[in-house]
Amino acid sequence: MGWIGEQGVKRIRTFGPAGHSGRAGMPTALLLLALTLGGCASTIADLPMVGTPAGAPARPAQPGEYLPVHDLPTSREGTAMAPAEQAKIQAELIAARDRQAVATPAAPGRK
Image (cartoon, helix red, strand yellow):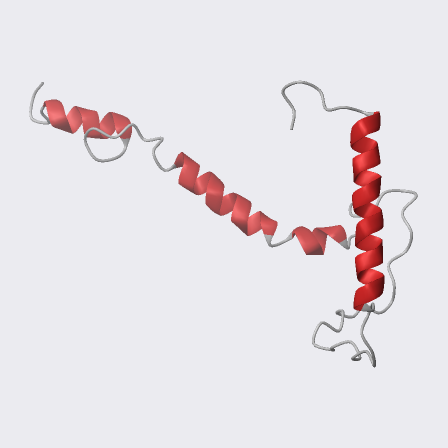
């Protein structure tokens, strides 16, 4: 091969270290490009001809505020339901479940 040698020719052909194909950095470069362009998405969305479709409503002048998640609801003065009333409703639900079980028996294989 002359003065370059066999390994030197491989390096010249692949433009990189011996044994690498030259396309190893392609996925990394595409990922970096996607992340870089992803940061421009909000800027592109605000362009008049690109960002919004024809029938879209106009954006509000003031952006929406965050929900007040730190505010606690006011406490109740009494109990939500009296225990006797809760037992009565529970008995009615059990009776309705039993009537439904008799009216439509379960299919075989289902519980």
